[in-house]
Image (cartoon, rainbow, N blue to C red; front, side, top):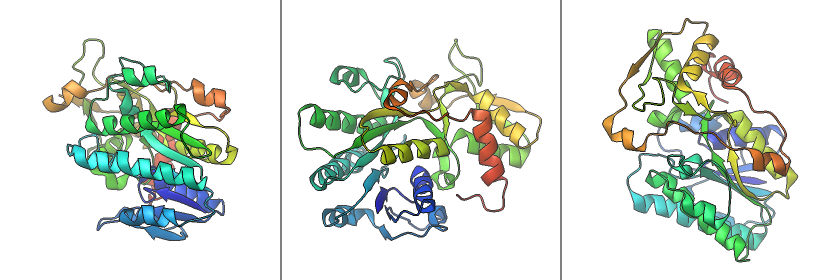
Length: 326
């Protein structure tokens, strides 16, 4: 069976669904709370749902796992409690790594494009100590993910015990079904969809950078189904290890994404702009683009959806249906 931590969350529930559809037995570790997050997994036949505080004990005594996909984390880029971030995103991940190493279980784990900070050091998934040391994340979340990346790569470089296969995945701007519980951390695609559905128009952040017109800030938007396909390939291939970007490999503007939402809803684009909040401006990214050469060189050859095709699929298969869940 597979263990997916954060399995009731956005990316985790999409992966769990794909594995269940393949006939795999799946256990998730997650906290469901009292909101509607449980709907992300309501359709799935699962072996068990393990509370996060019981994860290490459950994993300690387990034998015969086909793989652990560790996606559970505090993922809010606005989280200010650094002790919580260290406890959940660093120390727990270290323990999961060590248990997988001892029990010889493959491990995939979620890193983040937030590790690249403002992008001034580039977006190359170079795992050398020198390259990693140059990165300067802009928030505590990105820093905690970067700290674990650096720790894991040092473990490997110094020859310490490690999982038989391991891969750190630097997810870029992911959008798609089952992100609805994320509140302000939902994708731009979902925010724009809600605005258009309610008012017929969309409002984006204005640019405060002389090189970018309003709405022409660029992000690497990647559909969640493509992220799942990469993880599925890694699990099936079994031999590829390393630190990999997971993005479309294309920098796409907010205007382009918004127009894709209008097109999928058969609406005329009506877009306005508002000032970016003052507190966000010092940490605002105007450009992200995943360099995908390392994943391609490792053998992954499937195409990634354009923002037009990904948004079309998201809306027509999910958001415009009575049941929007995966």
